[in-house]
Image (cartoon, rainbow, N blue to C red; front, side, top):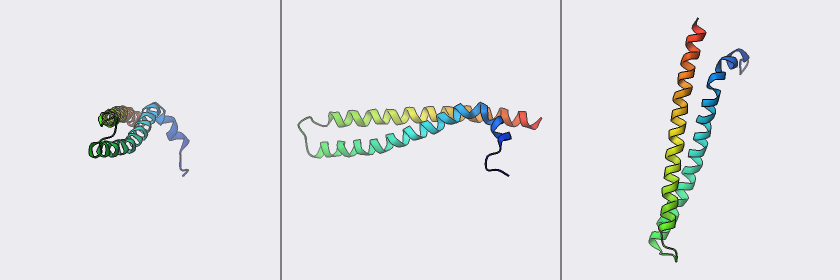
Length: 96
């Protein structure tokens, strides 16, 4: 058996867009997690050693990254549910 069966690929076409969104959401969430760690570090440093600009910039960056991660998780989960629904239709159509 081949690693990727062309007959199966034809049946997975309806879920391809949704699965692409799942992967993109995961990549964005992962990058936002790393950026959020740096923003949290900057926030802690700004809170301990007061810079000229204060800590509000670091706090806003941290809050923005939290919202970005939340949005990426939401989009990824919605797309995963849609892909699962498409796959459920695929299973019922293949059983016939």
